[in-house]
Image (cartoon, rainbow, N blue to C red; front, side, top):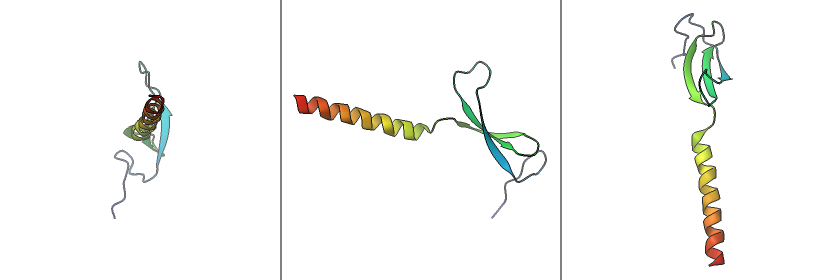
Length: 70
C-alpha cells in the first residue's frame, strides 16, 4: 500500500483544521501537513449527505402528519 506524503516536505502525518476563508459565509475543513502546514485538500465542514438525509426524514414526518390529518 502506498503511503501519502506531503508534496512540499514529504511528511506522512496530516491533520484537519476548520477555517472560514475570507469573504466566505461557510466553514471548511482543510487537510494539511502536520509538519509544514501545507494545505493538500479541502472538504465541506458539514457532511452534506448526512444533512440531506436528516432533511428527508423531517419532510417524510411532516408528510405523514399531514396525510394522517386528511
